[in-house]
Length: 256
Length: 351
Image (cartoon, rainbow over all chains, first blue to last red):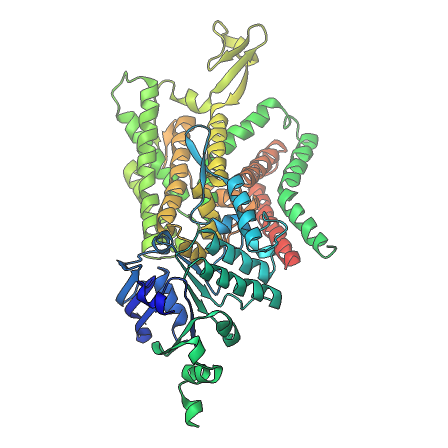
């Protein structure tokens, strides 16, 4: 840990702020994530976790503050820009196109092309299918028919596709928003195992979860948000579930 | 697995019902209408459906992207007026290919402008497509009539009508096949024995259908069209340039409408602001009958072709049977509702 601290943070955000009308959803948040570190981002509903990560993944444009990726200041003007710089996100709502198949979803926005009829460039579906198979195998996920539209799949399979999409692109930073919410216990284990694997590969991970047990199982450090503000930051060994819960809801439990 | 079977059956049925319906129509009219099932009449159906079908191609993309383009009918009219004005403005003695290309370039160029405006307003200002294109419906209509002075503009240029009404091949029993022109030396009464094969509008439509099919099925633009229609927010987060694609979609729709307008110039040797008025709803009907969902994300070019053919066969068949032409509207209306019912039944079984 101390060794990691001396390195540059993979991600650093300074004074990040986002307002929606009169509501300040994220208020002046500072945060760092170091290479190979798993940071749990927790907070009650509406604490601003999803808004914070959507600024990092380029979906929202911050109203204030700065984002540094490996020391370089970045202004993500679009999700594509963020993905090009290696920030991959698994969204809570999965952000899949239900009318498309698993393969198309995994490659959406970054389809490999092949020459067709001499001049024209066609989407290389064969390559996409083979690559999809191999990334799903790597994740130990079994989807029998990859050409079926996502809407015909189970919740777990959809989640798997969303995860496979993020994993395929060799992220420099992985953001996971409630990655285990829709899953049964065996699939939850696979996701947590994936987080460990990413850490072994030195890929930093930000994981948002309501399930504090998951957070304790994988995170090195926890950042707590409440009403848009970062209220606490703890190494996982130095905190307890009770403390985190009271930090999330505002300390009232401790006072009582 | 057994729980899946009705859903699977329904999916298959919804995919092929339009084919079966078209087949049933053809069989019915062949049995009841004298002269319906003849090379001449079937080619006439193909030539007559070409303008509608070309207009429906762009609309297919727009509807798959969960949009709608209500302006295509009058964009076609505007393009036909612009094309007619450009072609008649050329000095006498201009070679025919140059005249035709000028009409094509000007009609297409003028027609793309409303598409660009539609796309920009929908993408950048987030105004619903229904409203924007309804506004453009009126603007293009007014512009077309203002340009043409309220009257159809005749294009009396020698040979132009042959582009819109000619055939790729001609067959004359004693001389075999000839290309583009009836065999030399065949004149007068003998000309009536010449059989035309592949009317130009049909050839033109087939080429555009193949291009549109390739674009939708194999290009990145086509895949993104489905993605935008399926879940626009997901498309944005995946990094698809949704704004740029939206502008391109409405330009494509206006572009095919403009091509339909130029084809109208060639076929009817005039340009008229209201030439596409009746085709707007028919082209949307063709797309919907072909299995596209107005909620977006579903649809194919082949489906649209079948949809357009169903409309054309109904119209042609009823004429041959000598039925009051106003029944055509009723029949097409019934088929549209039928198409949506099949789609809904599929959704219900699936869920």
